[in-house]
Amino acid sequence: MTTSEEQSEARTRVHVFRDDALGDHDAVGLARAIRGGEISAAEASRDAAARVRAVEARLNAVQVHLDIPAHGPVTGAFAGVPTFVKDNTDYQGLPTGHGSAAFAPRAARRHAPFTRQFLSTGVTVLGKTRLPEFGFSPTTEYEGAEPVRNPWHTGHSAGGSSGGSAALVAAGAVPIAHANDGGGSIRIPAACCGLVGLKPTRGRVVANAQGRRLPIDLVTDGVVSRSVRDSAAFLAAAEQHWRNPKLPPVGLVEGPSDRRLRIGLLVDSPNGVRSDDDTRAAVTETAQRLERLGHTVEPVELSIDPHFTDDFLTYWGLLSFLIGVTGRTLGTDFDRRRMDGLSRGLREMYVGSWRNTPGVLRRLKRTREAYAAGFHGLDLILSPVLAHTTPPIGHLSPAVPYTTLIERILAYVAFTPVNNVVGTPSISVPAASTTPDGLPIGVMFSGRPGAERTLLELAFTLEADQPFRRLQDD
Image 1 (tube, rainbow, N blue to C red):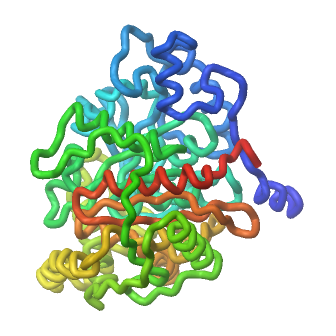
Image 2 (cartoon, rainbow, N blue to C red; image 1 turned 90 degrees about the vertical axis):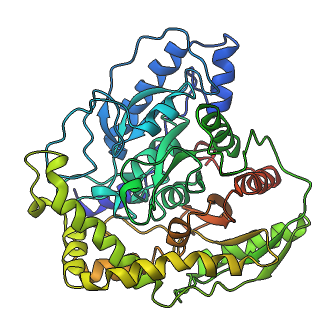
């Protein structure tokens, strides 16, 4: 590719919104059209599959395609809505590859528990989306394969680890898709791709098969969507399948609340990473909008243990180490030497510091106390999702030398992991402002355990005040 072709590629936006059965419907709108007989579920699946084929050569978002299923009677809030499952979650009959070249995946014998919960909403699964190896990276890139590209700007990252899902939804291929979050993996790609990404409270949906066996369960499943009402409708529908009796029910949130909130403002991360100018401006502008809408916004500090970043990194390394040890359960040909540079670097770092594990776990578990103290007198906290705006492809590639790569990751992913350690809910929504070249910027609201209703109501408020930018509008 010539230099001029590369520059043209870097500026390209990609979407497949058009006049077909999907139109520009979100998932709620599409399900309503199907229920009303305006279109059929089969037409929705057919046109979604055509959109995916049209965009895939540019975005590289799909890991496994399914044949368009035969449609019988469908029920549920999203009955007949086409979607994808992330390729770290079992779907019966499809391989689960976890984004890794270290093994040849085999077909899953049964659906994962969350897959069953997701299917209970009535969605039609058309395949599985790509993720970085084992979900460790905040960008969906590889050493030996094409990256997932951001449809707003194909020279840039779509985020990670749910980058494939976010790219398809933002581009209009499907209105909603599965995502999960162990350190920001719902919220990061939502921020990069201009979507809504709600990480629920730990235990709000059925437990993730991988996370529940670990000393600290970081991973929560959910969706990425183009509208607040889709994320709200998903959570309400998921509760119809299973609801955790230890948490207050969320129910169906359908719009803003009249309640006026006290919101803490956190512009720089608790571990001392300063946000870049565009990100600071987006968060500050959001705070000003909230005050205009009647809410109270005041600066807040979260006194997180100074060891938090190093401790989270050590725990991250423990996860890579455990995969290296147990990988043959994924495939008999598993070879940890074929894991990518980030996974290998994390594992080697942990091997050199494993004796610190008891102290790491103890301090991480104590984070909930500092987090709770920071909420004294507050309903929510507003912060960036990421410390700087979406990087170009290659900046966070696993081919970058590990020492440089991990410095770049820690300077980028400086806000989201706290919620995973503590188990609290948070949501990424698009800010009104963008980068100078038009990329979305996400802002994040975080709450106490069980605060999903408050988060969704406030997200509805912002969306009603100034509708989120849509790729097809530019």
